[in-house]
Amino acid sequence: MQLMPHIALIGDYDPSVTAHQAIPRALELAATLLGARIDWDWIRTDSLDADPFTILAPYSGFWVVPASPYASFEGALSAIQFAREGGRPFLGTCGGFQHAVIEHARHVLGIVGASHAELLPGSAEAVIVPLACSLVEESAPVWPVPGSQLAGFCGDGPLAERYHCRYGLAPGHVARLAPGALRVSALDEAGEVRALELVDHPFFHATLFQPERSALEGLAHPLIAAFVGAVTAAAPSRSSPLAFT
Image 1 (cartoon, rainbow, N blue to C red):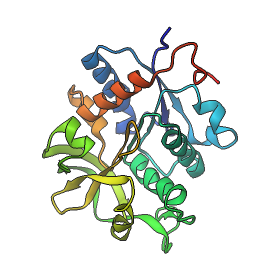
Image 2: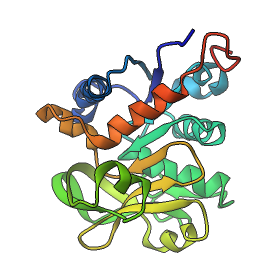
Image 3: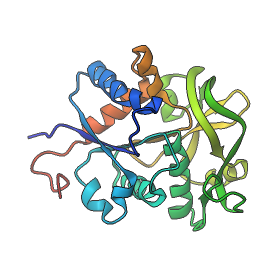
């Protein structure tokens, strides 16, 4: 028997955060579009400090949501690592994008001290740094990279996306990604990286923009629909050892 797909929303829920208001509606719209049934739980990052596996194991998909810094930096990284290594669908938006970059830098590229300039200003190993131009409550066009998975979901663009962000990928870190599986999947009009995807993973996408905000206009975003579709396909059966272990 198939269990209802269950998504873990990793972040510290705050009803005043616009993205947090939008995410449940975005999931509902995507599920309706696909004719799917899904459920989700908000999981505080600091709840993952002691035993993340026990908390994360029952979930079919993971969304690391905006509004960082998180209560637990390490808790957020543990959820991303769990999804990446376990091959479970992952979506990271805004702060989720930033922490996905750090997790990959630390655990795949071996940059042990990879950090976030918001937490460690002036760090020589910051892979997330202040944007040249802040994108707080801004809207800007984004172009998916031709041939990327993102382009397959959303088309070649441009996409009109909303941001609430002051930090992004360090320009010097882009070259480090080139030989690996984490690749650039979208750029802005100045050629700055706005999305990444992991090509050897069933579904692993991170965006600096907040696609969930389309739900506030009643629109199902194609990337979120693709995420819900991947989660639905990944949901374990009741007899599966992956379920509630």
